[in-house]
Image 1: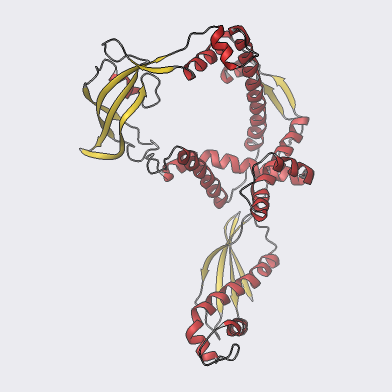
Image 2: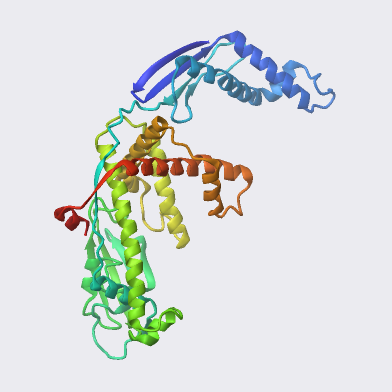
Amino acid sequence: MKVTIDEISPVQKRLSVELPPDMVAKEFDNVYVKLNQTAKIKGFRKGKIPRKMMEKLYSQQAESEVLEALIGKTLPKAIDEAKLVLILQPQLDSASTIKTGEAFSYSVILDLWPEIDLPDYNRIEVERPEVTITDEEIEEQLEALRRHFGTIEPLKEDRPLQNGDIAIIDYSGEVDGEPAEGLGEKDYYLEVGKGYFNEEFEKEMLGMTKGSEKTIAITYPENAVNAKVAGKTVYYNTALKDIKKRIMPELNNEFAQKFGPDYKTVDDLRERLRKQILVDKEEAAQANIRNQVLDQLASKTDFPIPERLIETKLNQMIDNISSHLHERGMDLEKAGLSEDRLKDKMRDDAVKQVKTELIMDKIADKENITVENEELARHVDTQSTVKLDKKEISDALIQHVLPKLRAKKTLDFILERAIIKPALAETQAAVN
C-alpha cells in the first residue's frame, strides 16, 4: 500500500492510496466466494457456480463491494500511519476503475482539527447590563394583551384607509412587465402601519378608499434575500376590498380577571407583567454576559476553520428556517427565499458559531470537562422521545445533545472565574 499526502490548507489534506494488484485480486476472490453462496442460477448449486458465469452476471455488484471493502480496510490504516486527527468523516475525492489483476487507487479529502492557541480564559472581564423596568414597558405589554384579545370588525364609517386599520386586499406583483409568481394574494389581511408587509407599500396605501385600486411600485435592494425581487422594481396591482378595525377590550378589572383567580384588578395584572418582564430581562442580561465571553474568546483567537464545518452549520441554519416555514404551510421557494442568498447573509454568523464551538471544545478537553450520565438522563427526561427508537435517540444524543451540554458546562466553568462588573453608561445605552 502506497500512501501520499498533499496539503490543500492547514486544516485540509488530500490523502491518496495506491493498492497493488494482488490485494485487489484477493478481495475480488473474497467477494465472489461470498456472492456464490447466495446466488441463485438454474442448474447450479449454491457455491458451485463457475467464476466466469458469476463475473458475467454480478460484475457490477462485485466491483462495488470490492471498492467499498478495500477503502474500508485500508483508509483507517493510512490515516493512522499519517498520524492525522480528523474533525469530520473523510470525503471520497476520486477512485480509479477497479478490475481484478490491476492496481487500484483512490483519494479522500481529510478535514483536520485546527491548531488552536487558547487565550487566557481565566478571569475574563465582562459587564452586566443593568436591569430596569419602566412603566412604559408594562403598558406596552398590557396593550399587547388587549390586541391579542381584541376583535376585528367592519369599519362603520365611510372614510379613507388610515394607519392602524386592517385592509383586506387583493394584490399581484409584476416584474419587467410579467406576472411574478408568488407575489400575489387574495383576501390578504394587512394591518397598515405595522410594517409587517412593507413599510413603503403600506404608506402608499394610505388614503385609498374601499373598492379602489392602485398600482404601487416598490424597488428592492440588490441584497434582498428574496431572489425574485432583489434589485428589481415590483409593481403591485392592489385592490382594497374592505377596511376593518381592531376593537380592543377595555382595560379594566373585568379584563384582568380573564387571566385567572389571582388577578382581581388591573394593578394585579400589571404586577404580574412586571415580574415576567424582570425574569425576561434577567435572562437577557445573563445571555448578554455569555455572549461577551464568547466574543472575547473568538476575537483573541485566530485559526483556520474547515470549510465543510461552516457548510454544515449553514445547512443546519437553512433547515431551521425551512422547518419554521413548513409549520406555516410554506417552503423556501413559496416564500421566495434563495438558499444561496440566505447562506451569503448568514455566513458570518455561521463562521462565528463554528469558531466558538471549536474553542469551547478545546477548553473542555484541556479542563477535562465531561457530561455525566446522570446529567444526560435529566436532559432526556425533559425531551419528548415518543416517536424515536433507541438507535435514533442514541444518535441524536451523541450528535446534538452531548456537545451542547458540554459547551454549556464549559461556559459555566469560565463564568465562575469571570470578573463581572456593572455596565458603563455608554455600554448600557447601547444595550437599551
